[in-house]
Length: 284
Length: 268
Image (tube, rainbow over all chains, first blue to last red; front, side, top):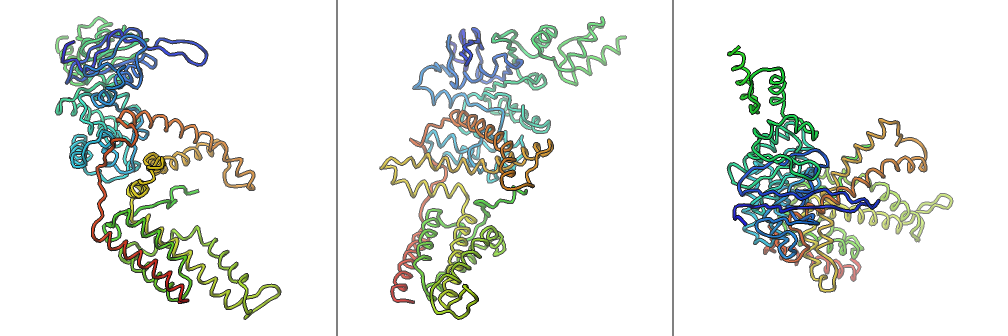
């Protein structure tokens, strides 16, 4: 196994039997390798298996077939459970339901307390984690008085305090307003770029996925596309076929191209798109 | 209905000598004070208790107004207790009207009973006003720690308490939201008899319970993800240490408690 892969799924399969006896296959032989220090977005429609995949990275779910390696540990090995969870921290959708304590700093201290870290070091980790998400001045506030974006940043700090090598975020912005979404996305990017933490972002927002270095698209338990956002978004029809909309910029360029105009499809950001259009107007 | 106004376990942050006392010391003191209140039976011992409480309130810099505001819900109980003691204490009647008699003993007894309840409530308010819920559960966990030897799940109980405290504001907010939603669809929570009012609560309670269970489920997973595995091998960020002042105050509390008991013995 290559040392730099922090997450490695090998023929990962997951199925369960529901009450009526039906056994849907949620993950169907997924092979995926995620390098340490990268920012990967996993994109998919509801029921694509992306959240199930995320839960495997933290040993909340165990594979029914194949293997999931986290930091070189097999998630099925019960003795490594705490090490696995400390290596790959997990942030969920609803910030309210992940905050345990009624004071921000006490909540951030929760994970290191569980790990038996000595008190002085916990203090240090809590301050550091709150600093990293920009919530230092709220250390003594009550979580229920914070905004959604702030709460989610506290939840992220609570995971960072474990000093994980990798953070898995399962639709962290789904319940937030646009301002909160921006805040959280900025924090996520910072964690990856400034602090070198591997980020795996599960999302169905195209504009969020476009900010990652690598994009993995899932549908019906399979990985159907894998590459940089620029590469993946080229396949507009393929994405639409699995119920995903491309970013509006790409969609516009695609329409223009359908109309027979010479435009590139990989201008994802607003500026790039504007430049491409300016160039087009200039030529004609 | 203003659900947000509930002052349940409300905490006023501050930095007074009372705020800075070790929460365990405060908990022990409050308990001692309550015991002493029930030992106190006569004017002198009551006087001591009132002075002590007044000093504590002054030191805590909690305004009398906030204490009085918290009293509102118990006014009814106070009045009933007062009336019952006033009329039903046997003794020489100094005033009577039909079957109602008031005796000197009754007057005293009503007066003491009301004062006792007032002080009882005030001293517990003082505890919750100056101690954060987290400190309080922490103190309970540590004070009851010896009970672990007889397999009482102290850590679990303390964890449940602090999670309950964390979710109270959330559930109140949610109740408000559901009420508005049901009202918008024509539900009526305010009129009708007791029966109707109770019935009207069903469409409120069902969604609230469902949501509470969902929250509990998600919280449990999130806690596991943050490596929670029970109280074993767990450390704490804030370690409680008794200072000299905490010890001195607790000794004083014990002294007062015993003193009041002795005074009561001599009929003072």
